[in-house]
Every structure is written in structure tokens, then in C-alpha cells.
Length: 484
Image (cartoon, rainbow, N blue to C red):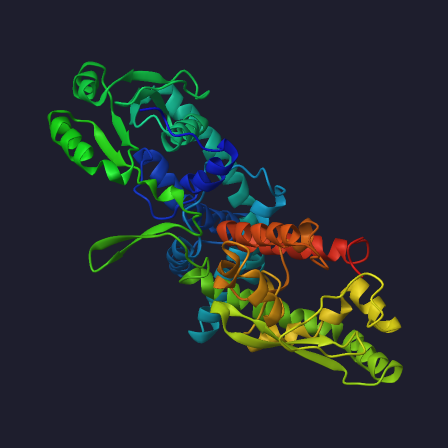
């Protein structure tokens, strides 16, 4: 039987979740795991000690309490740090901003506890200020240094593990490529085992077909294989069970890589329900602590922005009222979180207020748009009332843009995965908008592209990505050729 072929770009896009699936079994060396879990909490304590020393003060028992408290809080606030992921898609400052925002949360908790327990008077304000300021920079430097140091330590000790992959298929090829690309794994894939006739192997380093499944147990024992990755489809269950029985006489670690990657994974991770493992195929990125971070950031940024823009909103409201008949605020039904209907606010920019079963999108040179409305739409000032939607909890500052209910009902029938974008709250701005998909979507293909960016946002969400999108939105407001 020949290997089933599939578009490499399509399959690579789907199995990209191999590098981002959360809560998977840890295959790191113990040293790497320890660094990923404890580096930031340890550096925060060390930076506190440095701040006390630089101020010429004594590290009293109160500072010991503060050190322990900050260690415990930071261990929960900071997720396991990434030593592998390269910032290829976003600027370097994204890493620093991600650290900075989580550090602000830690500082806020510490300050609150200090005043609640009336212990704040036992600490020197210059020490705390110095600590608060230099810690984010220290953490960023520590992460960069840790990556380099761990690589050199593992290289010096020659702790390279040998691995083989069972299943010469697209999933196996992609897994091989990712293992070889991650230098910190220090794992070398020797090759593939498969019963099928292989016409060709893609370019995956020096890996090759080493034999059939019956040859695997002897090869593992004779060649010091440490890791075995089984990438056979679930339909091959009898073969897998027979293979596992034959491998009981080896000491190799065995991992099963399920072919769930045939699906378009959104925030894939492994959870447990009373001890039974379940695999999340499609999930919101805002579960648990991440949901709290998203909501708190929306509230804080929303209040801050509203305090800055209320004079502009007042002026725009008066302008709308004086230049054309009709309400100042245009309210339209949109789909929100989980597909529930919400009412979205905008400054009225048209002479009509359409919100029925058929809504015609605004077009360039649309005669329904008022002269002032054209300016408001060009500069996105018509969207400002949506910050009230954010404070209401119906929208987020960053997320997939909400579409009219009539448009949702039309596109959900023709675009695969369209409704997945409603796993999160709609946003005032989004990843699609800062990548050129703002304004009218005059074709299904253009809407498909916008939806792909929305789903990409769900796959890769981070607070730093939200800030980057906000930053790019500000730059685009006055020079976006697609706005009208």
C-alpha cells in the first residue's frame, strides 16, 4: 500500500498544533523542566535581594516573607516559560510586554496584600520601586541566557537521545521535522518503521525507513533507542497493541501520537475528568487563569481609554446629532460569545439603521453614508462606543470583529469553521483587521481569509499578542487604504 498523499502546506498547517498543544506529557530533560518552572520565581527573589543590597539595607525577616510570597505568586501567574518558541511572527518586544504585564499583576497582588495586612510600612519604598522597575528586564535576560546555557550544558554532557518513529506518514514526517528543529530536545530521529511500501521520504534530515514493524523490537535493543513515537492511525489499533506487546522487552519510552491532527485544532490540550484523559480538539483560549487575565486587561484598558477619549466621544456625538437626522448611537444585533446575540454600539454613520434579516454591507462611495460618517468610518471613530460594550462584558478590546446577524447566518453555511470564531468575545479590533482585512468583505474568499486570521488568533492568543494588535491598530487608523 502506498503512503496517502496530502497537500504539504495544508497538513503542515493542521499539525502545527504539535508545537503548541498544552498539558502534553513532558519529554524534556529534568534540567530543562526545572528551569522552565522555577527560573522566573527564582530570579524575582534574587532581584529583590539585589534591590535591597543596592539600597544599602538589611534583608530583614519582612523581606524574607515578601520573597516567599512573591515566589509563590509568580509560580502561579507565570506560565511555564517557553525555551523553544521563536518569536518569528511578532517583534522581540512582545516577549518583554508579556513578562511586564504578568509582573504588573504580581505587583498589584503584593501591594494589595501589603496594605490589607498593614505590613507595607516595614519596607523601603526606594527598594520596592527599584525592584518593580528592574525585574522585567532581568526576567527577559534570564530567559535568553537560560536557553543558551541549557543548550551548551546538554551539548557538553552529550545527553542526546535516539528516537524512532513508527509510521512513515505525514504526521510522522512533521513530528520528525519538529524534533530535529528543537535543539534543546537533544533528540535525534534515526528513522521510520512502517509495513507499507514507501515511494519517497520527504526531506527530514537524514531519517530513513529502517524496516517493518516486525523489525522494530530487535532494532531498539541493538541500537540503544531511547524514545519510540507511534504515529499510526487509530484504525491500526490491532497492530499497535501487538507492537506494544513486542516492545515490553525493551527499556525505551513509548509515546503514542494520535492522528487527531486530521482536525483543525484550536487550543488543543489534554485534560482529565475524574482520572479519565480527554483531548480538547476545539476550545476557547480563555479558560481558567487566562480568562481572568483577559477580562481584567479589558476592564483596565477600557477604563483607561475611555478616560482619554470621552471629550472626543462627546464631540463626535454632537457632530452626528447636528449634521443628520436620526439617533446618535446606532445599535445593531451581532453574535457574541458562544453565538449568543448581543447589541453592539456605534456612532451612526449612515442615513439608515439596518438591522433586519437582510443587511447590505457598506461599500466604497456608498450613498447611505453621511459626509461626517465617512470621516468617522475612515478614522474608526465610529467604533468608540464599543468600549462601553467592553465594560459591559459583551465585547473585548481585541478579538474577531462581530458581524451582523444576517451576515453570520449567510457565511456560516458556506465557510467551514466560521462559527468557531465565536468561542471568544468579539473585539473592537482584531488580528484580521491589522493584517489587511478591514472594511467590506465583498467576496466569500475574502471573508474566508478574515476567518482564517480569526482562528489563528484563537490558536496563538497571548496578552502580548493583544497589545501588539492594539499597537498596530493605532498605526493603521489614519493610513488604512481599506477603510471607508
